[in-house]
Length: 278
Image (cartoon, rainbow, N blue to C red; front, side, top):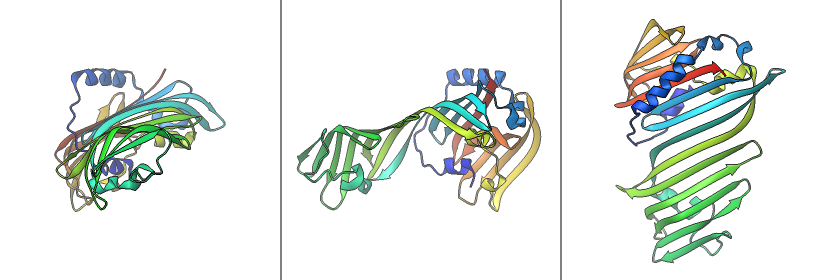
């Protein structure tokens, strides 16, 4: 299954609009992009920058990766990414074992406090476990011994290694018998890939198998994106995995998606990829 299908499998609910500010800077990245760099892995050189910007069913994300060196078929790079959005969880996901410790027991990690008021447990503080630091700010969980009936507050996780830092922040509330989670993610670090894997890891590949189903139509035309001739695939209908596409256009060059836009499940989606040296 293609990366796009994986993205669509993430259930996000928040309605987020991309403003004129975002599009202005997206246009600048498109203007300086040279998509012929995707013609060969030999084009991967120090200073190459790949950026992606996505608004997928309400989840917005941006990433930027810069090649630091290429030697003996290995690409060393530094990167950063940020995303935010909303999704839903079941209330019983927050049973006592959810937090990597039982908040109803006396075995609470050092640095964390749990205050009990009836069936409500309020969690504050932080603790470190291996390479991760977990923190809680007024996280309230109402648990009657069998079921969780309410959740609210904030919690976060920071994972830090010698090469990267990964930060996840969650603000939770209870609505309609479900937990609504507003999430923010950020990544900053360095990595290394084989040169023949680099483009495939940084960009979305177009795979027609990701858009299959008897009620789906795909129309292929020739067009342009930036400085290259691209194939444009216009997709409409319902896919085998029950996603509904309307006027969904994908711009593809050398097997990679440079842009897509349209509607999926009644929501506007956008994706743009940019690549340039310097």
